[in-house]
Image (cartoon, rainbow, N blue to C red; front, side):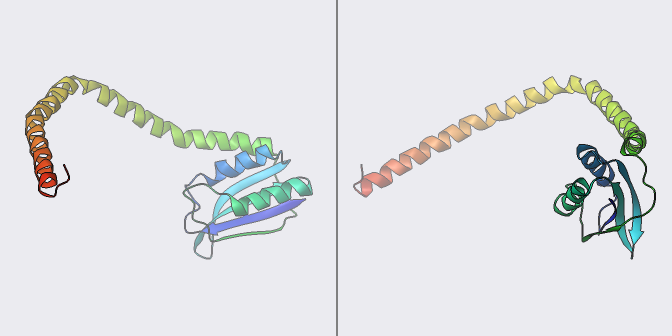
Length: 164
C-alpha cells in the first residue's frame, strides 16, 4: 500500500516534522518513506510518501492525525493513494540524518562558544555572592524587628478580644 499524506497548517515547517515522521516510519518498519516541505494554497505543507503493508501504513496515517511535534500548528491532514516510486526508508533516514546534522552543527558550535565565554566570566561569581550576602544581612535585622512587632500586635489584639 502506498499513500501520499499532506499535512498543512500555519506552522509545520522548522518545527521538527520531518525528523518526527522519519522516526515514526522507522518505528513502524515501513518499507518506503520520503518526506519534504512544500506549500499548498498559501499554507505551509509537509508531504509524506509512505509504503508498506496496509496495517502499518494506516497506523502511520492515524498517528499523523493524532500526534505532532510540540511547536506545530496543523489545520488539516489528508491522504490519497500514491502510485509513484518511494525510496527505501533506510535510504531516506540516512539522508535526513545528514541534513539535520548540517542544521545542528552551527548551533552546537555557537553553544560551545557561549559556554567558553561563560566560563571566562566565573571570576565575578564570588563577588556577586558576597554582595547578595551583604544585602541579606542588611535586610534580616529589619525583617526580624518587623516580625517581632507583628507578633506583639497580634498578642495585644487577642488580649483585647479576650482570646488569650
